[in-house]
Length: 541
Image 1: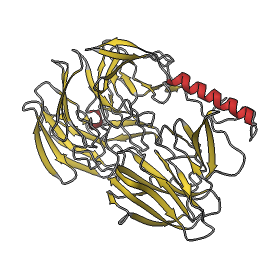
Image 2: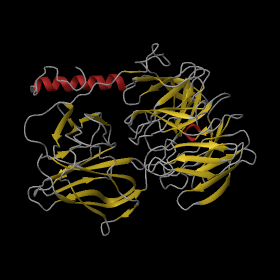
Image 3: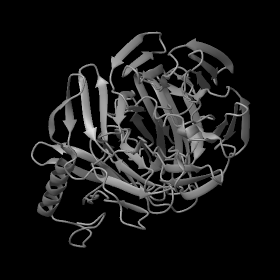
Image 4: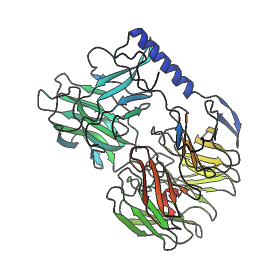
């Protein structure tokens, strides 16, 4: 069965055919998602994850610009009246999006703040004349007799969008939409990303996609819980209707929720203006200046911060959702940080000369923690934002530290890449470790959220053939993209703000950025000078 197609070509299937359809999908999910765990040795016991479906480090054919096997999408349609609620999405859920006009993303951004039942966030709007961005919403359910199955509900009404980042919840955290017109029956649902373009398909995964959309009996109120959403992740709320001609004025309310200014910078993609997009930026060692092309305004900012010999350590140290200017000075082992929340600076001593700084949010409090990897000892020294100190013996001579959330728990994992054998070693938590083969000698680790599902994907850039090899966490399929020229510096980031890491390089020879946007497509941007250090390359060791 091909993507999005019905095997018989008909618009409806018999129940027996549907059951076979779902069982086949379930079998495929099991096949591509389960790997064999075998013992591996590294500083004690760990588990090795085998990539049964692919050969790590396989190369693309000459002239091939992109090659990866797309997962199969199953989008059955059920007969009968549309359902009035959507269960939590607990697996790959694919939903068709139909763009009938200009893209509405990212919609109205809910400001940072604490919204209570007594003082909620309230906004009024009107869907009259708006785009029908979303045409159908799908969800995955579980049946004792039939296992997992899929259902869909039409969303043909015009819609409006809101975007927000949750920091914490109260006991009754929820979004509510109310209308006054008896002929406007609203619905509301959530997505972890925003559609763009024409005829797009969005994949919702696990518990973070469509989230419990329900209607009251009078058909003038729709409400959705937000208490199960992931902290620090950007979400999009759609105000829509299951009836094509239903439009009009509405009131949008959010309560019992604390909202962050922008997406947590977990992947260390620099976002200095907090709009959810990586900002093209360079640091000039000759004068210590940062040159930032703000994605929100397209204005250039210039900041003098640092000295020749400093190492860039941009991260969100104050938890306001914006990347802070910061450098690590090997000569005195100090971190010099400008906090974007109040424009004050701080100095913290942490590390020794020769250490490799690798700050990230290791404890899940939405603030980057000071951390260094000491190659001479194979040890990590970490000081959390609450001043707690952690030391990990995790590494060997020649290993490269890297950072990512490889198990999707919202916290960065202690990770090293071993170039000598192309193996990754990860500590998820005390006593929980893994090793994984992905890459060959000479590869450069460039992990990121290339699948858009909250999990960091194993990825390497191969300078010898300028090819990116990504092991997607959604299904284990490889994504192989030839992108770059000899001498280019890998600079992955989320440049189009869709929650997916984009493949990108900075070319020192002409000071130009070449970006393969997952939503925006291919584009280039001259910015910088020869000798500049791309900020997106700060933690590519």
